[in-house]
Image 1 (cartoon, helix red, strand yellow):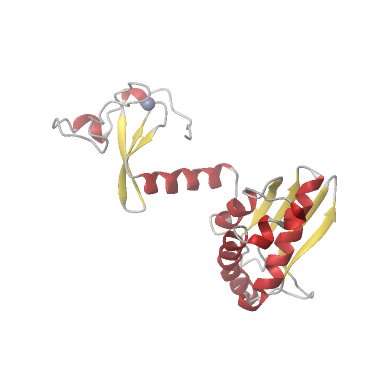
Image 2 (cartoon, rainbow, N blue to C red):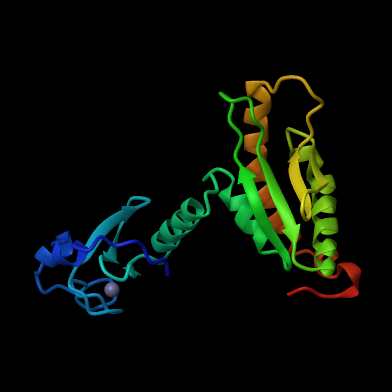
Length: 209
Ligand SMILES: [Zn+2]
């Protein structure tokens, strides 16, 4: 559960729910004008993806529709890690791979002529197997991608692997940016599909998961 910075007077303000004392049952069959986590009385209503949820003004606990809460937690995590929303679902899918973590990511920007990329690093040598599978997933999914995506090895202070569309040089066109951005979702779908397949899970002779 995400906890947020609270201004000192946050607990003293009256949120909408605090005024809404009709004695009704909340989504959990209990009154939601008091936080079930911390007992604080400052519970506000926030709308996430069109669905109202309740959020404690003191401890940040959220109550209500699970899917809406997950979407909100997810968006907050992307913001806190400074990962653009458009590349976040792919970043999250990549970080589910054992031993892989994301150092940096960009969603690309047509106005600035920049392409999206994700910088990956590995926690241990055996995570190389995950990168091998990722490279294989790129190859198998190439026909459905608009750009040719590669996994480029770089060494700065550590070994990193940059997932990005290949670019032959010259200026990046808005069409190239748009195509690469469309691919971000396709890449995520391919990855989420492939990690469940036998060739991924049994690569290297070890079952993962
Ligand atoms: Zn609370």
